[in-house]
Image (cartoon, rainbow, N blue to C red; front, side, top):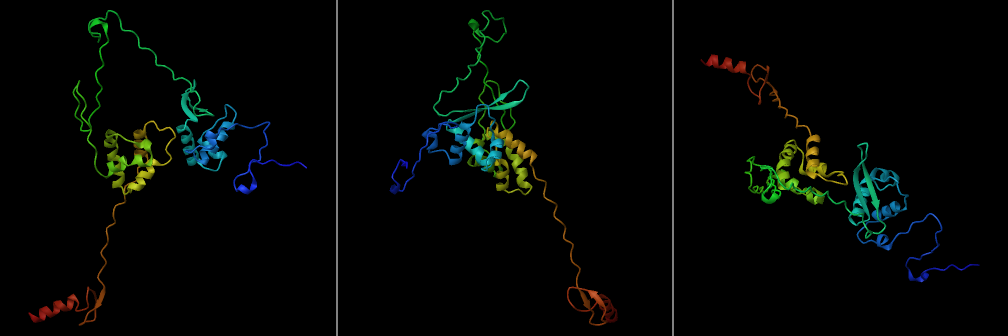
Amino acid sequence: MDTQHFSAPAFCGGVIHVIVPHTREYVVVGNHLAQHEELSLTAIGLAVHIQSLPAGTRIGVKILSERFEEGAIRIAAALRALERCGYLTRVRERRPDGRLVTRTTFYNQPAAVRPPEPEPDPEPDPEPNPAPGCGCDRAGEPAAPAPATLPHPSGRPARAGTRPEPVPLPEGPAADLLLGLRHEDPRLLLSARDVHRLAPAVDTWLARGATPDAVTRTLTATLPDRLKHPAGLLAHRLETLLPPPLPAARREVPRPEPFQDCDSCERVFRAREPGTCPRCVADARQRAA
């Protein structure tokens, strides 16, 4: 009868490993991933699954959410965590037919050598003898470009050659809402110029009865994994998801006064309180005259 060999005594109370060497269909996972202190169990398990897939297998949030039960939100967060820790890179590329595809690269070690970034094309040398008025300085050196100036929110054009005026910090409920989006997602860090541009649209939402929490949930729900232009995305959502105006308040129709019995002729008339009808009052006045 064979004797099983365990890696630790049973009385220690800890985990006991029964190690059987793999001979086929296995993947090697380093402890730097299996015991990573910053990754969640979902991210670690997803990394092991991706590492076990053959090269060329398509992966994405939609494909993985159909395969596993964690859901698209948790899987997207796990992929972002793997990117942040250096195990995964995703690059958008355009195919010859014009379609955009995502090229995903997985690194079994985060310190693996990355492919070198392509160097920018060298700028062409200036002409040795530029013609007059070609935009070059003396000695054939290219002239320094004029500093770019952005329009001021007030609408005043900046003079050429001058530094743009600083944009004042916006104020109001709409500006506070936009400036607070960074607490929901750090990628939604907006500049003062973007807040000036988006605040009127947020004011419209608030004027139509939307609460600040509802606006925040709408602007931060299911953000894409690669958010390149947060201000553009927010402007699109504020425009396309704008709620309808509040219905006009209905005019209340005044209720008629209740019926009363006349104390003199017992006719029925409308009045706030019991008493004499208007006809008996008029007859009494004629007799008194």
